[in-house]
Length: 158
Image 1 (spheres, rainbow, N blue to C red):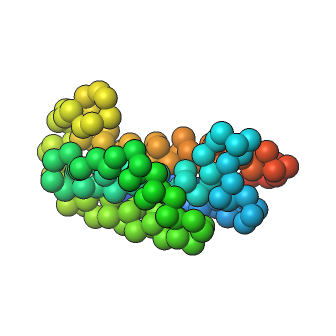
Image 2 (cartoon, rainbow, N blue to C red):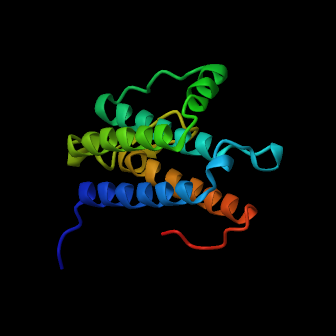
């Protein structure tokens, strides 16, 4: 039995889920990507931009072990809404996934099990922080899948 490589696992998971999100965003009609389903939901582009933002925050933390500065709610919303096309949102997702993969590569394997008080409301291991962006992407990919069904698309685009 081979030994588990945490870095390969984390980067592989990130790449797979990032691809699923891109496929599902691209499956939503162009004219619906920046529309709030039902008027209260977040737009698909906002969801993807938020995923990229979380990638960025986690990669910054893994590189420095210092919590990144938080944007005000207004700054955060303006930032996320600036990604108003699939091309912009997916480029941001690619950029931040690459930053996260780089942070994972440079991380000291001996520290994965250390617990920290990252600002997500609960203690987490450093491995959990590195894994969080992929779990977060998968969570939001489910929302993109559901939004597709609201527009009568029941195909699986993976």
